[in-house]
Length: 492
Ligand code: NAD
Image (cartoon, rainbow, N blue to C red; front, side, top):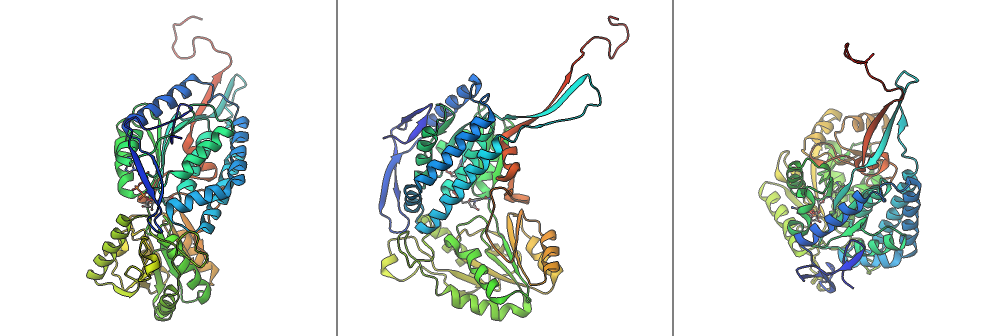
C-alpha cells in the first residue's frame, strides 16, 4: 500500500521516488517507503485548505472532536506492540523505551480529548446589559506540522492531538528517517472516524516535502520541532506570509549539582539526564555544572558508571541504551568531541565507537565525558545531541545560576540539592522552560512544554498547547444597535 495520505486516500509520491528506511542498530532494511516532494505537499495543502474552508470539520462540536481523540488513544493502546516495534526499528531505540513512549502518546491523546470539550472560551463583562461580549476560540485553519526523529510519534502526537482538538486541518511531515509510526497513526485516525482531508501525511526530505509548509500562502500555522538552524529557516520563510509559528528547538541543558546533593541520587540522574536514548533527547542534561568541592569524587564515579553502560539494539534485553540515528549523525558527534578536545577539554571516558564486533554494523558511540570544558567554548554552547557530557564547576549559588544561564538556549535544566530553599531559589532564577529539582526528564501532558530564548516559540502540551492551535477572538455584540452614537448630525 502506498504511504502518503492525501485527501482521504493513500497515494504513492507523484514523482515515483522511494526511500530505504534502515534500522540504526544494524543497518538492516526495515522497509522502502514513498518519498514525496513539493508537488505532493502542495496537493496535501490544497486538500487541507478545501476541507477547512468547506466548514463542516471546524464546525464539528468540540465534544465530538474530543471523543474522536479518545478513540484514537484507545486504538494506539490496543496496538501498542505494533506501534512500539515500528518505532524501535526506525530509531534503533530499545523496545521498552518505545513502549513507554506509546503510553505517553496515549496519555497525550486522552489529555487533549478531554480538554477539547472544555476549551469553550469565556464571557467578559462589558458593563452593560445591552452588550453581549465573549471570548471564543476558533481553529487557526491549515496547520503544517513538521517533526524530528528522536521521539517520532510523541512529537507528532503533541501537534496532531491539539490540532484536531481545536478543529484544524493539517499536513504532517514526519522526519524522513522515521516515518512508520506516523503512517500507523493515519490508519488509527481513519479508523476513529476522522473525515477525509482533515489529516494529510507527506513523507520526504525537509528541503523538498517540508519546505512548502512554511512558505505556502494557504498554510496558516507552521509548528516545527527540530534543530535550531532549521527552526530559524522555517521562521524566516513563514514570516513572508505572516504565519502563526510554533517552534520547539534544541537545548544545551544545565544540570546543577550542589555539594549537599544526595550523592547516589545525583549520580543516577546525571547519567539518565545525558545518556538516555544515547543523548538524543532535546532536554538531555548534557551540561553538568557541579560544585567545585564535589567535582573530583562526582566525576570519578560518573566515569566508573558510564563505562558500565551496555549498548545494544532494540530487542537486546541487556542493553541500556542504543545507537545514534544515522552514520551522518554519529560523524557529527565525533566531530563535536574532536573539536572539544582541540579546545582543551579532557576526555575522561568514551570518545570512540565501541569495539564489540556485534555492534559494528550499527551507529553506536560510547558514553563520553569531557571534563574541564571552558565556559564559552563550543563544547558548552553547542548541542551535540549524542551521548556526550561536558563538566564545568561552580563556587556558589550565584555562580551556578550565572553559568547555567550563559547559553542562547533555554529548554530545560536540573538542580540537585538537599537544601530545598536553595533549590527553589535557583530554579526560580534559571531561564529555562522546565526545571527539575532532584529529578530529570519527567514531563506531564497537563504541564506546558517549551523553551525560553532560542529554544523555541510557544508552548506544547497543557492548556497552552491548545493555545497554539486556536485563534482567540473577542466577540463584542451590541444587542441594541442604532445610529447616532458618535457624531452629531446623523439620524435622530
Ligand atoms: P532537523 O531540524 O534536522 O529536522 C526536523 C524536521 O524538519 C525533519 O522532519 C526534517 O525533514 C524537517 N526539515 C528540515 N529542513 C526543513 C526545511 N527547510 N523546511 C521544512 N522542514 C524541514 O532536526 P532533527 O535532526 O530531526 O532533530 C533533532 C533536533 O530536534 C535537535 O536539535 C533537538 O534538540 C530538537 N528537538 C527539540 C524538541 C523540543 O521539544 N524542543 C524535541 C525533540 C527534538
